[in-house]
Image 1 (cartoon, rainbow, N blue to C red):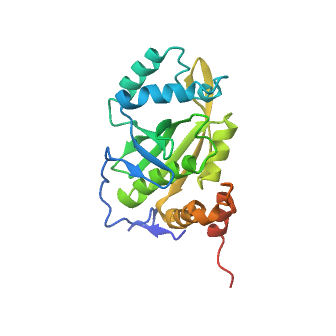
Image 2 (image 1 turned 30 degrees about the vertical axis):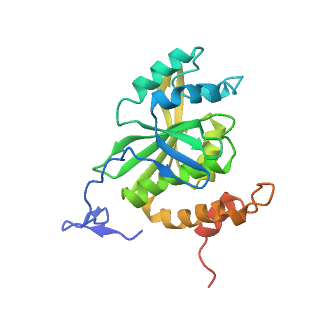
Image 3 (image 1 turned 120 degrees about the horizontal axis):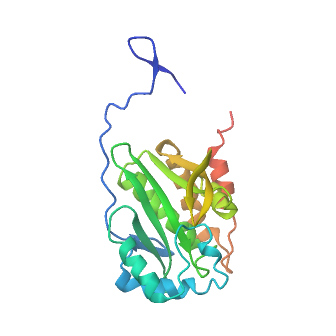
Length: 243
């Protein structure tokens, strides 16, 4: 990275002469080929989400979340009403096209328009959504909103350092590992070391091309199995062209 210096000869960050604070995310739907991602409406989505989460019979989805599990629908509905009342976190529901039912949530949160930084978190995919093209497309649609529509500079992913599936998901989606924050917080009466990951705006174009190639119908055979892995497409996009 090229260095820049002030009039005292001190190294400083590269200039951003045209930077301005970014808009906050709107409460509008994002429509893809496999799913629709839209802000949660508890009146419409609470019962569908609760039913989908009941398919996680062991309750594995809730282990690394600071809330839940919920043994009664009324408790989940009341929590969702409170949690969805504000704009940060702005919780979104993922509706699988074809099924037409909500099967998971993901939030845009810790929104910092001045710095152009936003985090995706609170991801909770019920079993019917896990490991499906819709699951990946939902992440792509949120990224596209953050970078293409809103012009943010940095997109973050954080998780419990012991949550191996979340760490693997971040890296599969193209987030870069930024390290470990030790004893970062306490939740559910236990310590959490937090892993940080990010995507920068300068990395987005290559990632976007990889996502769109992976989501292309030609990338799936008649049984719906992928021909090319997303991680391989992302890795190929990061490699410099041959001389």
